Length: 133
Image (tube, rainbow, N blue to C red; front, side, top):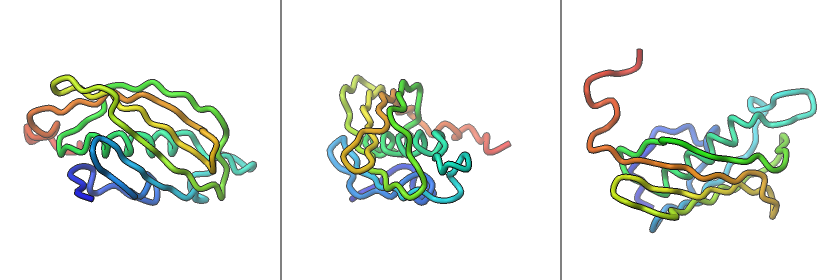
């Protein structure tokens, strides 16, 4: 696995890469107490989106890749104790634009699906010297 992007990601919060190759990625993530939104053990959707976004970035796997837009559906609830698998694959590429399909599964059930539009700018988005505010 030659990961070229998002190398500083917190894999506990955004998924551990299991496979990255040929426009695809496979990640896994175990839900944690810090992801819980309420007393029922529901996992906040932001963590699911973060996992899906990470999977899309790794499918493109370029040092400068950024997310431009996404369309997603939360299909089933995820709860504390669930183990999530993310699969991403590039559907179309044209120049610097890549359309990536991502699905998240708990066991065999799809809990999230989305399309991510990723771009590869010539330079890193912070290359003008602008760092964190």
